[in-house]
Length: 287
Image 1 (cartoon, rainbow, N blue to C red):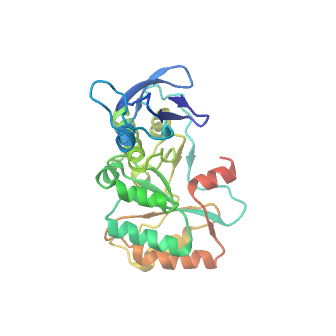
Image 2 (cartoon, rainbow, N blue to C red):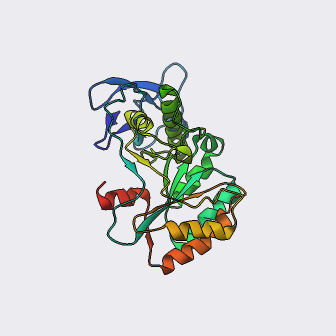
Image 3 (cartoon, rainbow, N blue to C red):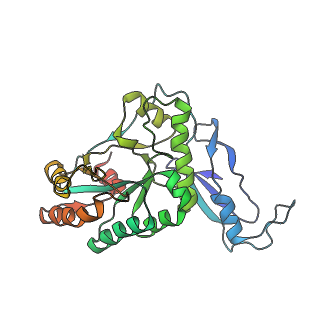
């Protein structure tokens, strides 16, 4: 096990090492802290080798060790000095925007969204609910394999302000672990709070758990809202977008998303907008 320069824990799996579901590890600050490690390590062992009972020595091993990165998230009650990085728009010089998707849905809905994005050659950032990923990990992997970025939208989608500190942090740590387990690598280390509900103290508590960025809703399409017409969803995006915008849509069954997404993309492209993932825009703007 080692720590990368980006605050991620790297777990090397080979014939001489195994991994338990939860370990105590020493972070870069020298403090021993609990790190959420999911069954991904055990799944990788199972995929590449067989462990004899009682001996812990693989009979059949992979040719090379596998390095699996985990975000360095941990429970931390000392949040008062945390300095959150909250982003609701990027300070871009050109007309570049981030198209993002929240939540979870059926295979059919998610695959239709992926098909549309593939047709337009656009890569997006998906903020996934851990509970949904846990039920259907292969769907999360399909999103990643289509070239999209995956990030954290909590485990069960509660509003975070008002939750007890450790319960709030568990929502983030557990979701991060489930997503890591599903896709075989750490998700991008940022969180979008459910419904965009956030205050400064909540942002501090999220950051204290080891989260790098909190990504706000930005331009909300409200495509989840059955009270709106498709045209009203279009207008919310068209009226709100500007260079550096973060546009939020949803992968929810029965939402407007699949019907309105092609038209929204056509309009944005005609207006000269280019698309990047949240991670690309963070890198390009130096945030």
